[in-house]
Length: 76
Image 1 (cartoon, rainbow, N blue to C red):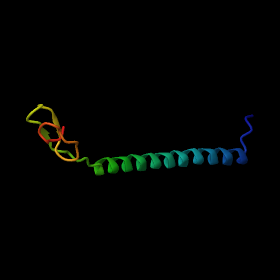
Image 2: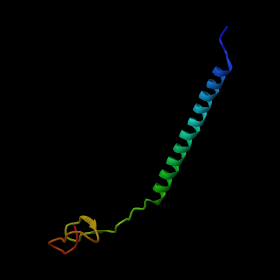
Image 3: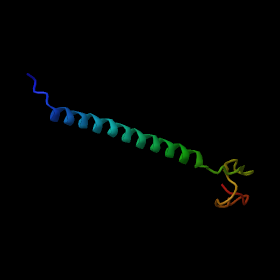
Image 4: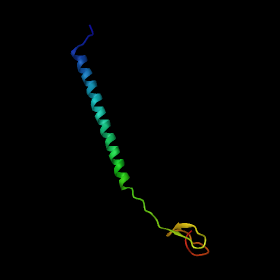
């Protein structure tokens, strides 16, 4: 009545297997991407620079690598 033959069952099994292994493959790639993102996030270290207050104008600036203040010689 429905025409279930051995050929159609084999094709159906192949489709189910392809979907199953495709899902597993995509899931593995997603886990790898998440693991790499977590590792790169943990390795991302930022430096914290020391801030100093200018005695004449009262502004804060990075202690090293800034331009010099004209009044006091400190960075601003």
